[in-house]
Image (cartoon, rainbow, N blue to C red; front, side):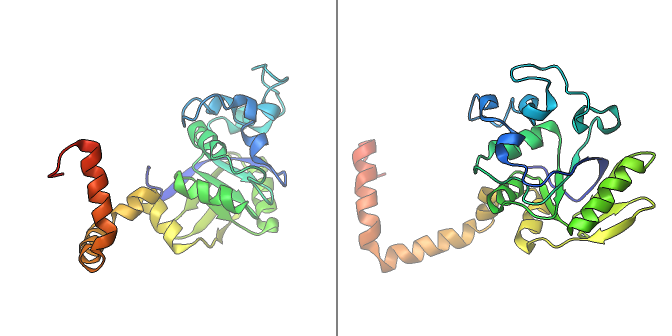
Length: 220
């Protein structure tokens, strides 16, 4: 997972409340369990003129030349609601988004963002509306998300502080997913297992016997 510190990039305003995961990546666009090959289906129901078509819907924000190459998405409340499919975050990330700014997120979607290196930025609805309007009016719709300082800033429009769980912030700054976070404690885990094997040998003995039966090696 790529670390996130500070990102200055084009931000696309999609001010819709209750953007669900089926809108982010329709089920018909999910043809594998891989994280790859999903960007083309991102917002397919809104991005393209018809189902099954790849003809751009010209007025959709991500099809407007002004927002080409956007890496920050600005949206409405309850973003990522609906099903728990992680494909929604995978599609956003593969498309190039590293941060989503909204007044609120579905908790599962928010956790999936953190697990995949996408920063879920919580800001008040009025602030989000201010940012979206400023992006439309600015000469260049660039926005800065500074995770280290926990701030969002826009030239000539202002800067805003946001809160984020300290553990989530640490993981995103370091670029560590949940497995990498756990492996940070590998020495402590090994020490615990060693102590526990002495204190509760009866738990570990059947495991060893099972391993021997599978491998056929009495020394394994």
